[in-house]
Image (cartoon, rainbow, N blue to C red; front, side):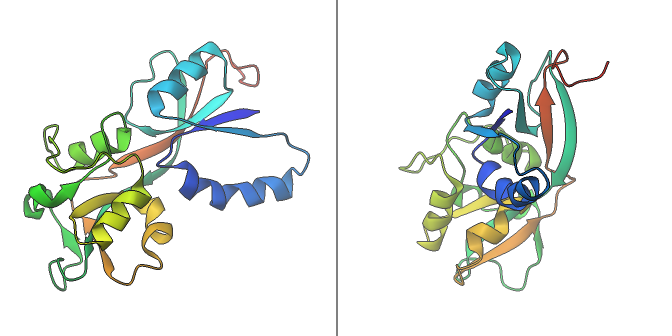
Length: 190
C-alpha cells in the first residue's frame, strides 16, 4: 500500500502509529510518500497512491475522506517575549506583525489564517520556510512567533526550554486530519 502524507503531519503522526502497524502486521508492505496536499490529491485521483493523510478543510472533490483526528493550534513564542502567565490567547491578542507562518502552498498556513480569522497575511520577513522545525528555530532565536498544531508540539518544543506554547482560544477544532481515498478504491465496500 502506498500512502501519501503532508509534511506538517508525517513527522508527528507516523512515529505514533507506525510501530503499532508493524507490530500488528509485520509483513505489511507500506510505502510513504511525503508531498504537499495538492500533489497528493492529484496522485490519489490518478491512482499513483492508494490513500493520503491530509489536513482538512481542503478541496478534495471526487475523493472520499474519513476524519480520524481533530486538533487546535498553539502560539509558540520565546519565553522572554510571551505574555506572562497566559494559558490561552485569542487571535485579537496576537501580535500579527511577529507571526511567522509556512510559505504559500502549505495548507497549515491557510488553516492557521482561518483559525485566526485573518485574510491572507503578507509575510514581511526575509524567509520562506517550508518546515515547522525551521519556524521553531526562528522563534527560539527571537525572530517572531508561530502557530503549531497540537500533534507537533511535543516533538517541536520538548527540548526547547526557552519556548512556551499558548493555546489559541478560537472556535475549534482548527483542523481535522483525514484519510482520503478514491471512491472506487479496490478495498472500499460500496
